[in-house]
Length: 534
Image (cartoon, rainbow, N blue to C red; front, side, top):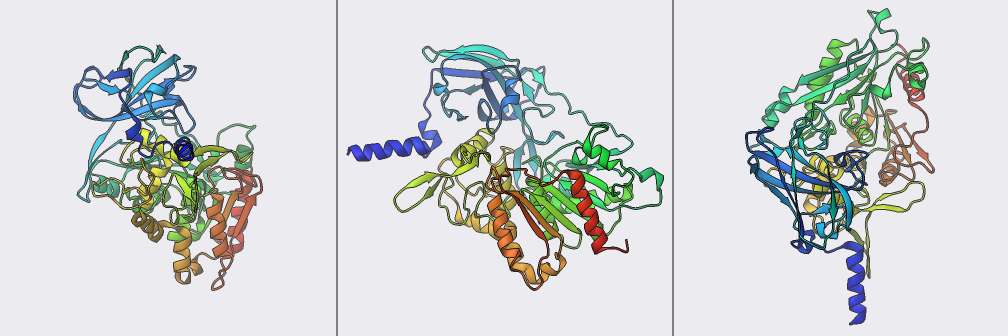
């Protein structure tokens, strides 16, 4: 019996209780949060956040993150002005799950109200989601969201405490950088996406022009599409600074002349759509390739041929660069993908989508071990378990509305659920994996499986175009998907892929073998060899 009790205790400390809601009980500490009629006379629907931090050197709301400060989240519907949302021991939090387990002491607290919009989609589903306000699906700073003033409090846990917070502050618009001689911005309403979502949806781009652009009014230029998370900044971090290496390269007379572009395509699920058509996000691939890129090429002197459109990006952008080249092989002429999101789904931030039964742990004959989500690349030490990461996203939002990495993968790679929201790969409270969803992922967006299945027809269009880079100590284990892609591509013969793979032996997530200027020199050399006549 003692051995059984010891084993049970070990499993509890390793994984926590299987059902997160089962361990919540009404605590002595509670927070009552409301908004006044002065900021909205109408009822609101959304998610209320309570943030607790040990310092106010940065506003508590801006300290929330994967490795950030303590916060709690709870949905609400049709909340009227002055009516209260309660955060107590029944509300799930992260990193500490239960409010009663917050250690006694002095803290700074702040509340944030994340507004949801009603979307009546063309597929017949009605969803309540956060409408991106050109901030990149970040509830901490989204224009129009409400937040409270910071309060300093003392938590005792010894006596009943009921603390009131009022979200009477309105987040301001995000400033759009002004156009300059070299950097331009465009933003268009996508008719394709607006029809799908039943609300106006906008997409855009930031364009960096070559140094010689105005001196050669009849010249057209090849284009580099730098993929990645939402940003209004210039491609490759360009800024006018005589001490900046990339600025020096770009403005040099002998530097290759390209037009460089970053795209903005946030969705109600994430700061980036992954640039492909999906049943949850909608036809973002069509919108980008039929509306946005044609508009870019209309306004600026791009060479409107597939060979002259090159792709690059890191992490999310790395997956996009690789996947767009594979899925649109004639539209693009080459991809340089850095630290790409999983190209093979046998390691999705530690989860083997096809073999694991549970997203929280690995199961062997006699024992279970927690699945590791994140490691310190310098040492290999565990930074987050899969269960912690999944819980963090659940606190950020239910029904796939967290704006987090695992949720967007389910939104992009997976099917629509019966309620219209994402059908998740796994149950976020138990970790149990849905094998039907895993099969859907494989058949639609496992890039290795896609190329293996379609190489006879797609391969001839991809010869020499695929170049992948990864650190062997990637923080999120993304290098393993790269290995499996390399295993397949290096064995191709009809035709041979003729691309490249490069690894940083001790490189973490974001490792790169050379700076952006050298990357562009490599792209230029590639184009001159493949298309010397142009």
